[in-house]
Length: 316
Image (cartoon, rainbow, N blue to C red; front, top):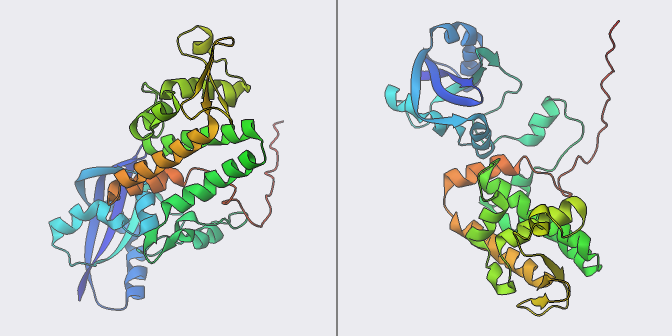
């Protein structure tokens, strides 16, 4: 006989502060135990013992844990209270705003995204970056970021499509800043905060705030005249490919020019500094996975399949 667990994760507004559990003594195969727990799910939910978690978690954090095969550690409080063995058999079910939510069933190990997509009826097959860039248990984040961002940056730069290349580089910084800070309206903007923390922009003669204002003009309007620059609150900067490493001030234009290739190198080094700063930080890596899953890339698009249009609804 062994103790098996029916576990319920109660989510309110995307956060789980409380879990429920019911234990059963069971003898039989793991498959039989799983079927038993599924049959008992509705009845167990009604009588489950509630437990406030010492460390609440978001739904995004749960998904990150599922991707890594470590999600069950988010509710280790249950196993400490009950004195569970090291690898208890369990069925884990999400309860969202009081309603059981089940759209996919898988094992405790790392989530198989291809299997999940197939079972959920996704249109096409998308490369799972986490498995694609994992080898011998190690995840090659520098190669992932290079392939997702710097391949296109270098391709356009080498083709002398400099404005397009700059837009891609600035968008890369936007994306990595989002991965680090998420949606934040705090000041300074996350773009500037990420640069200030990791990039040695002084090497090319500019600041994070100046690059942010250039970004606002270049990305949105394909010019270098953001509102703050026009008002004189921030120095107007631009870029060139033959500019000295330390930059060049044009008195006639009132523009400071920095070296474009120098910025590429500075950002590349900043990425290395950023990743190194979080080596061994499991919580940071789980956050990285959750937010990186939300990004899109040329290397992560649906490879096949068709999109089926939803019939238009009309009212009488």
